[in-house]
Length: 303
Ligand code: CP
Image 1: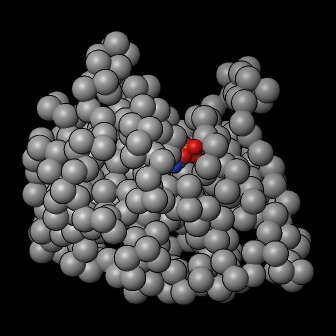
Image 2: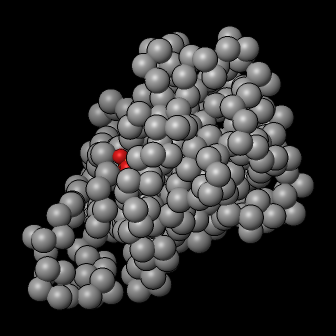
């Protein structure tokens, strides 16, 4: 990996991601190995925003590699509650660990942390901006389930305006030559600048629609409406009720179509779809551990 940090999926070239996937395959095979290559390392997971998968899979990855973890999950228990600045908190934690994983609601916060920290910083989600390790999990899942990413027809469905996973993923899919269709409720479309960037940088095939027609789709990637980023939560609930993936929507879909989701899901996927063998999102979430083991090993120069 080129730089010392992983802040955006833009930090990685395709060859580096492919190398990470090879390392992930190895990590997946040695999850319960007795060898602990990071026995003397300390990893700080600083979560200023809630998380289940990202925090616990980073912590699980660290434990599998033998590293100790310093975990921030409730800022009211830190000196931030006394008014200490974000920068001073990062500078302090930088002195206590070998690698920092950070999630924060403000876009650009991970980049700021990387600017002040000497240790490598991994962005575990900064507002609606980027979530690069989630994108690695998503691309890896497509590669595992469909055997290739190139020329795979992928529909990204849901809140494409506020979901950071979708922005990062669109970039990654463009880089790997997938054909992408963006499906969102009116007003929650993908940022045009991101679409233009992906098209011009990778000559990517990206189209937009409001129609729930998945007949040509190989991978249906769904995300929830990001209620916490709406000024009016009632508006978010209304949109969520109107925009659901149901068995009716999937009539005519390919039988082998794979449904992915970064999770958490709320009620954007109907129970009959959730129960179908096409829904593979818990397997996808499980890949979070070997992917994050690979990222940690690379950033600490151990692979
Ligand atoms: N996919 C994801 O980022 O999940 P969490 O918010 O639970 O970490």
